[in-house]
Length: 186
Image (cartoon, rainbow, N blue to C red; front, side, top):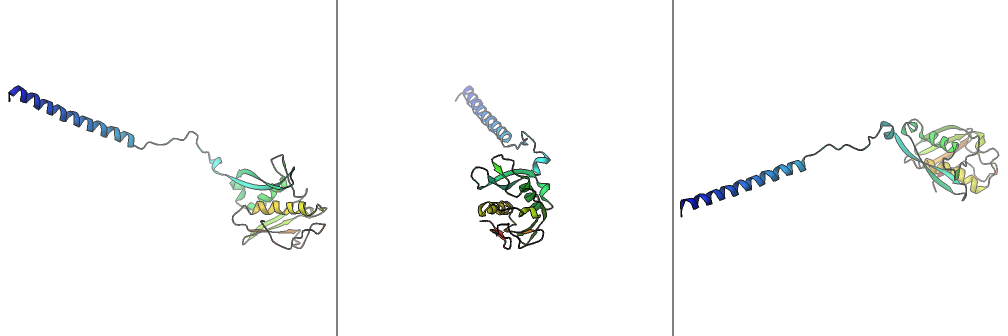
């Protein structure tokens, strides 16, 4: 072989090797850029106030059907720290936000005490809870189960015991429902 041909072949081989090395280096740099972990920045920061909110479910009577229906509310979790049972029942007494619902707890009722023992919530109401309440079994049942369904949404609660001014054997005036038993979710 002639010398210029050998030099040409050698130069071609060197150029091919250099080109292959350049391609390998280029691909390695590109893979490093793609695999590099970048910090994620959310579009909107979650405020401390949002972190404190929790969803609770309260049960009110539907004005049209007379059936108990759930109403979800977003409230500050700090409100539930000391006595969540009292807070939830007082929210029931205050009434619904949805105008299609209505409260079933008799007007003027006050919650004297709310405490949990084991998995039963003991509620003591003022006399307005039963005084003058002669609504019939269905409406009186709605009063009881508005409370029971709301409180049993909490995982630690399986039942509710009701008293009126400390009297655990109280009843609605028509005698349809008395409070001797522990009420559980149906």
